[in-house]
Amino acid sequence: MSSKVKRAIFMLIFSEFLVCLGISLVIPVMPFLRNELHLSALDMGIMTSLFAFAQFVASPIIGRVSDRIGRKPVLAVGLFLYMVSEVLFALTNYLWVFDISRLIGGLSAAMVVPTAMAFAADITTKRQRAKVIGWLSAAFSGGLILGPGIGGILAGIDYKAPFWVAGLLGLLSTIALVVSCQVIRMSICRKKWRKMQPRRTCMATGLTC
Image 1 (spheres, rainbow, N blue to C red):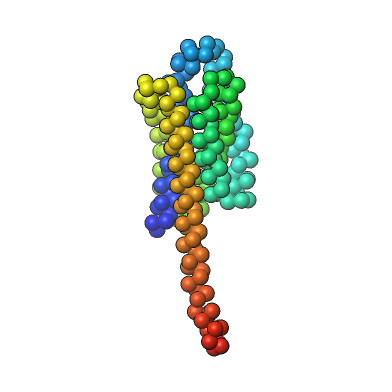
Image 2 (cartoon, rainbow, N blue to C red):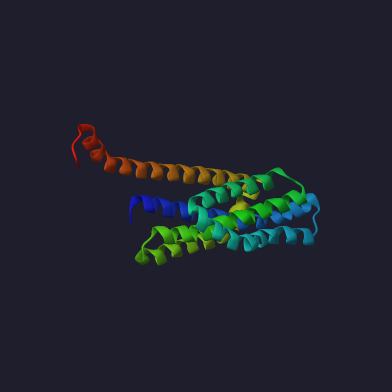
């Protein structure tokens, strides 16, 4: 496994972990929201379920889109939307904006989770594939497990703090993914240029290669 593939796999694992963290990060903050904003149990239930609903509806559509336009753009947009959803949740105190934030978060999960799995399958051999997909599954579970704990610790500072931190991580992940894609693209261009160089030299000297 090359170093570039290893870096790509690390980005996929971290992206998967981050998005799954966003699913469960809200759980320890629920009592604060309910007390501060006087929300009903129905309000809280709907807000919580909207994330999974958006992911359920969008996942099959996003899968077809990633097959057509490629994995990396879908992953980058998904991580950006994750950042938007977390920052939006941190900024507002209105229930309808909370609901929109959760819908955007679910859409981001639909863009990242299945696309990361497909991307891992694209860049690994048959021998490596099961191991890498196992790592991605572990990252998925790890995000769900650690989300409430991390959210509870950060909520001790401020009940909006978990979402500011998650939004910052989403921004850094988006930048890292875009930069890594540019580096890989430049590396490919250099290799193509080097292959063409001897032929260009022969044409300049007038000799047949």
